[in-house]
Length: 152
Image: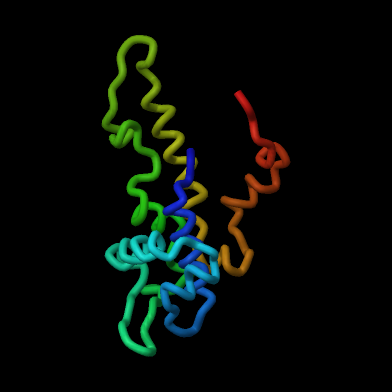
């Protein structure tokens, strides 16, 4: 699975908002996280439409989290900016049907979705910000094999 830049940028911007007690301008977010300002503007618009941030115009304006950072999961963010986490050709895995030798492939795709959910639905922005990651994450990061990139 590839995490698109849009999703990574969204999470980084939200972490910056989670660390702030005041509204933060889009320009400040872009500078703080070294993100392209125009692209971040579009991402912030998606996050606002998805109910994860609020915005206010004016001298005291900017962006704020719409909810407590301990209630916003990484999965919430990914779904707002990227859609479903484990689609296959744009379809939900449980709706697929295969025949012949590929008959059981749907089960693999459903399991992949379950594994992603196990991590992404159980880690919040607040936990990432504090570095207090839940067992759903640390059980993988504690495994030395998880840090090794495999080539073909």
